[in-house]
Amino acid sequence: SAKAWANFNGTGTVAIRDSNGNVSSITDNATGKYSVNLSNSFSAVEYTGSGFGSSNTISNSYYEAIFFPTSTSSHFLYGHWQGTFTDLAYIGSQAHGDLA
Image (cartoon, rainbow, N blue to C red):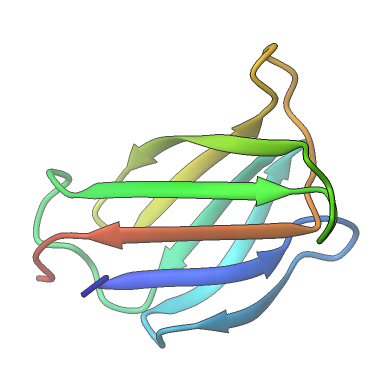
């Protein structure tokens, strides 16, 4: 099972819609760039993460995440396949690994 996951709104005032309880907050770092902050740290940065996003519930424009781990947060950059970072209304992120 995922040690941390969140579904959140990445437009306007970012807000967590749902999470597994190991996500303490979301930080909006810049357009299309978010940090998922953890309540319980991972034991090391050797864990995996992934994410997805969409601008709306019926769009065929989906965005993938570039993942950068730290032991206390996961940084995700959401961009179009052509390289443009975008704020997205529907974002999901998850991380798997050993907690400290």
